Amino acid sequence: MSRVYVEKPASALISRRTFLKLIGIIIAVTALGVYKFTDIIIQRNKYIKMRQKGQYEDDRRVRQVYGLAVAYENPMIKRFYDEFAKHPLNEVSESLLHTGYVPRIKAF
Image (cartoon, rainbow, N blue to C red; front, side, top):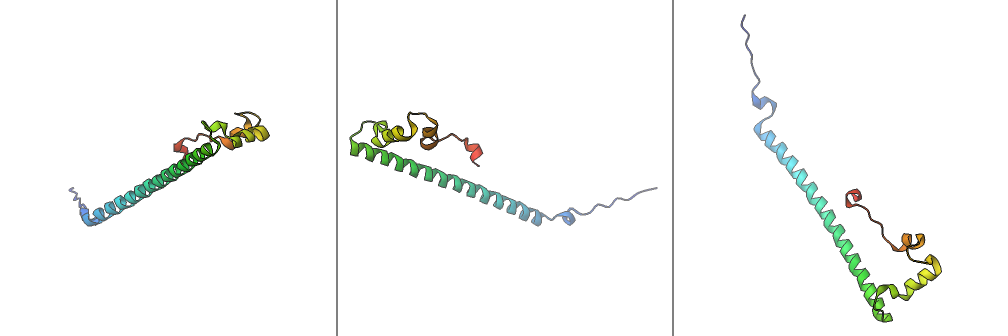
């Protein structure tokens, strides 16, 4: 008893042209996603740098106005500690003045 096996032609499953279209679409979607992700990172870093520049400029201006050699001699900061926080590294000063560390991996 002889059996005859007939295979479907490969083009019946997916043609070469369809395969290339699918791969092209996958690559395009991936590239756009990566581009958007890097754009978000660049915008975030730009905002952080602008904020730092503004803070350093404010600190420099206050030190010039009051003739201070260092930032911690600022009368506004001294008043804050006298009225609210009582001493550095207090719970109040930690929550209002100091920033917390968040790993960048968890930020996303």
